[in-house]
Image (cartoon, rainbow, N blue to C red; front, side, top):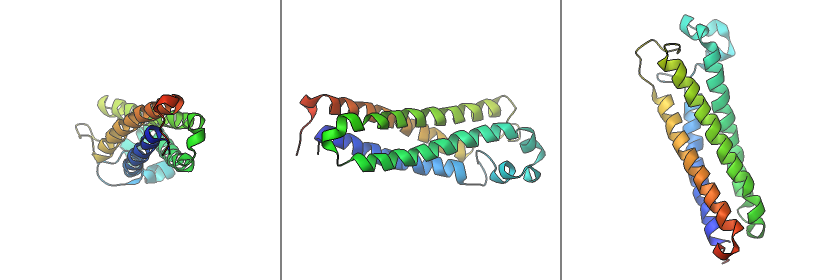
Length: 168
């Protein structure tokens, strides 16, 4: 196994697992502090007046968060599938960087939409209510996905430069 790029893949997998948990909690856990209401998104009859008025914001946030959740799972599966391919690593690691970039972008877009809707008084929470745990999970997932982007880029650099590759 190539030591440096392999350890980058292990770090990527650990951080991605944490990111999957945080994004899953932010996307699917309902209750106080949630990012969106699934019952309202699935059937508009279940919406409160405030939720119905701002249903588009909830749809956008839910779409971006769920898309990033799916991409996180795909990135994790792809990472596990190439962990043994040390001799193809310089080509196989490129998609991990793109996965990390897309995940970071989708999570950031969801947080920007949620924050803009919440701060401008257009949000689907009553005015003055603080951000909930769903947004905190999303913020931590954004930080971890940015860290994963850096790790993927560094692992790619180590895989591309044969001087840094050490086979065991």
